[in-house]
Image (cartoon, rainbow, N blue to C red):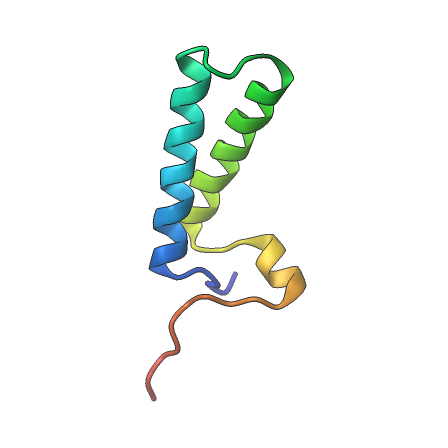
Length: 69
């Protein structure tokens, strides 16, 4: 897998994952929406750790900084 996520993207995803987890575990958001957000936060953390987003690959988006030759 070729990396397609930059550092700012990873930081935003991890921050959103933390917010979603806190909202769920403090019972601010419950039910189906809560479960969807927890699953989404897991996906955000996983994609941030591997620096690859399959959705970015499908649409041809790359936020990784260009490598200098």
